Length: 216
Image (tube, rainbow, N blue to C red):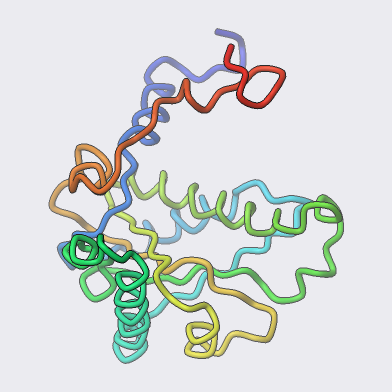
């Protein structure tokens, strides 16, 4: 505890948002009030970014035809992913992996064009533009949870066709289709755990000291 700490209640709220954030796939339609959407986008825009390049761009998809087009791209990749999974294909096809047609708001998060001009912090690690966008999405995710809204990150799509669908300039790259809106309930655990698709690993397995593989 120090002079810069939040109050106990404030700290608990932060950790609660982190702990209860879920990658949501089941939505109940509805709407998101404009002022709430503005708060969420402001939260995303306050994310850290390497060299203050702010590489994130968010495209709201309000055209039903475009939404259907995105759904078609996701469905095509869902089938290809199932084929690549071999013996787990049938189990994968039974999973609900997106809520593109069900969510109140659909957004596409993308990396801006012209990123090669930004050298600060990227000379040896050019992928830090992607890391910065991921931080913005995480900010949006946590803020949505605090507002009682679900958010799902869909990555099942080929970037180039989605970029063309949204008339993105050359060099821009979509990273996430974000399904956002009211939900009936938040999953008590990650959906893939509940569906017995995967198991969470303990934090202790991922912490090393001084050398890789050497645990404290």
